[in-house]
Every structure is written in structure tokens, then in C-alpha cells.
Image (cartoon, rainbow, N blue to C red; front, top):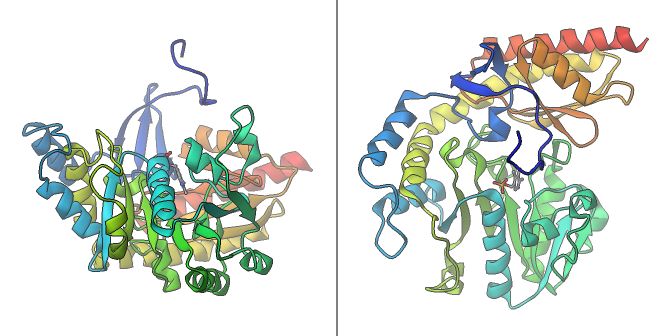
Length: 383
Ligand SMILES: *Cc1c(COP(=O)(O)O)cnc(C)c1O
């Protein structure tokens, strides 16, 4: 690629088509997809119902601006809040959803400080980058937003950093980029209780964990939590760019006319796709995801018998296979590509799997078996 900034290290092939959980590259090679385009195409590729919903909207109107009523936005927002007392502010990405959350938290509390966690990932714009616990991706871009401090994830000492001068605490239920580590249930519940005690808003970043990924519509439901604010993007419209900041209804008065907005926010094509995604993710669908995940975890736990696997972590169909230091995750990913399986990496030499939620158990198992074969081979190479 000659005309695009080299901000991504890309694999030397191009995906040109997809169907369900299978992708085809420019050489005609087929892959079993265990990435969902990094947790985006949760319903897979080339889905007739989604295609139809977007195609229908395409012939009506592409864009109208937010100067007029939008029943489509309201229908999607209704699907997102799912009967709870929340309001939705639409945007176009995960980082923007987190920006909106940080702005709302500061305005609603009149406080400046934000607590975030080491190894978190919240996005690449200044606010969300400032609360991202990864110094490497901040090099050359300082100064960051003032008033941000970090604590250790899943660490009881972190709870003491929740003080009454905080506007918000921002946290992922499962740290995705950070290595696919799920929050300890009692720790996360105590964190939520502490926030409430000191009047700091709890922001849960559901950009990767949301939209059915963990067997619930939102991962915090697994923990019986009700955050003040949560953010969505990746899977919300299955690949049409969209984001959403969802906040308790009581916060509505702080986000009045003129306080926040975006030209493309709530774009009709994205809304048409999101509406169909939400309609698909009913309780029956989510139960099937949970059942498939349970099936997959049975086989995933077997992987720890391999010498090069130090552990398997995650929740639902958000899976991290931790590799010992003598096996490099980048090499494993390339070997799997050659074998026709697409996977991802995360921090800590972790092989990360985010398969489409629609993938049948038999295909999930085929993917896991292929991973097992490649990892077993790697041991031999390492000996
Ligand atoms: C991907 C991701 C983001 C950023 O989303 P973009 O749409 O890339 O801006 C934020 N938070 C989490 C947890 C993510 O996984």
C-alpha cells in the first residue's frame, strides 16, 4: 500500500469476500474466521437479513443530520437500553463513545479526575487514549488529558484509589487488548459499590465485550451490575461504523441541546444495521451463544495440557490462549493463516479468539483443533 499512512502492520493478503464465518482472500484461499474483524462482525459475513436492512435504507436516505426527528435512532436506542432506565447518545466509533462518557461524567459530577486501569484499552483519541493503560501507544503524543490516574486491574489496593474527587472510574469487564483477562466478580462488584459511595460514575467500556460476545447482550450482566454509563461500538452494527454512549436517564439533563454531537452520529445506514443486529440478539440467540461458549471452553481447557500454553482466560466467546515465551504469538498466527484459520493477538503473548457468535459448535471445535495442532507442532520446533 503506497498511499496510506503505515499506522498498521498488515498481513500480505487481502480479504475480498465473506460468508457466515468463512472469508476468502484475493488468491481464492478460504479461512475459518476466529476474529470477527476484531469483535465487529459478531453475526458473521454476508447475512441476508442485515444486507436487506441496509439495502432498503440505502434507497431511502443515507444521511439526514441530527436537526430532525429520527424514529430509527429511537428504535435502536430502545433496543440498546433493553427495558432499563438509560438514554443513548450515538457516535461513530468506540473511542468517540468513550469521549462522550468522559465528557458527560465531568459535566454531571462537576469533578475533573478519572481513574482508569493498567493494560486497559479505550481508544486512540486524546480523552480515550489518556485513560488507556498502555504507555507505548502514547509515545510522542503527550501531553495527555490532565487528572487521569491508573490502578492495577483485579487488585484490591485499586479499590482504595476510588476517592470522592473522582468524576468517574472507567473499566472493561474483560480487558480485551490487555490480554483477555476477565474481572474478578467480587472485585468488580466492590469497585461499583465504592464508586456509588463516593459519587464517582462507573463507566463500563463494552466496546469489545458488548453485543452478545460473552453470552449476554452486555458483559456486565454476567456480574449483576448496573453501570452509570456504558459504551458500545464494534459489534453494534456488525461492521457499519457506529458507536453509542449509554447513560442513566438521570444524566439526561447534563447532555442538553448543544452540549455534544457529531455530524454522522446515528447515521441511517448504521441504524438500519444496528436495529437488525439488536432484533437478532434475543434471549434465545444469547442462550445459544452461552451454550456454544460452554462447549468451546471444555475443549479450550484441554489446551493447557500443551507445554507452550500457560493458561486460557476470557469469558463467553472472548478467548485468550496464553503462550509461553519461547513460542511467539505472531508466528502462531501466521502458521494458522497458512492452515486457513484467522486469529488475533493480545498483550502478554496471547492468542486471542473472537469468533462470529453465529459459528456452529462443530466449526468452533475445528478451529480449536487446528490451533492445537499448530501449537503441538511449535513445541517440537522449540525442543
Ligand atoms: C476497540 C476498542 C475501543 C476503540 O474502538 P474504536 O472503534 O477503534 O475507536 C475502545 N474500547 C475497547 C474495549 C475496545 O476494544
